[in-house]
Length: 345
Image (tube, rainbow, N blue to C red):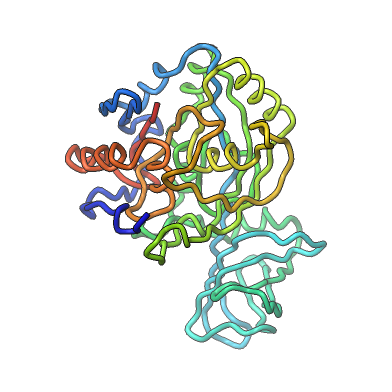
């Protein structure tokens, strides 16, 4: 459970700075847990891993242009990063802010497109976080589309571009609210989804709005002391019923990404049935966790010492996972959000 046990050497040149030319043009590494086998192929091979009756659970969250560049009304530039909408009658968000001098409560903010904001008092805010109330004309999400920037991960060393509006979004994104993409889903095309349905695979959506906490480093030596940031999720009655029926019938549940995995393992009752509804999840999955719902996982390659890597180690086994990562480095797989894919059976 030591943080150092989840480290690996990664040449900087393997961090993908741009998406593959085609969504489904990435490579695929497959781990077979029972046999302890690791193999390499192309992403479209993923279709052949499914059997009729399997269920694929996807995260249909939609990334919003959460990065706002503006200025204080009193002068000075400020960057505001939307984290989560607060449940009240006004458009108030929990945000991260960055400026040369700390932004104090009462500070008024000015952005393009007539968007304005004010930093509110909040005695419970964590360091760097502020409550910001926005004023605007029309629909807030439409204003964001016009003036906001795509919140690319910190390891992508470039400004967001027009291409990112499409490619840092899954083809099945429906529910706006995420500030980071569920990246395993970025490889899927409508054609791949069609092939899966024709094979007899049931594709079911749930929603988890991925927050910036997915990129926060673990700062404790013993990972069991780490605390996850809470993220909002929703499971429909239809998805819950279909997943539970598949589980009763012994059909396999594939989770598309660590985000879908966390919801599928969190929103369970004492009888291991998926419960419809919504809430917030701060589930931290690390080795020793007992998976009750997920049978197979499709995911990307993750940061060293990250909670995402710890989840994969919990699912596939720590030694086998890190062996696969070492092989991926040798074979020059592309890493992180715009990188290649892994299938764990």
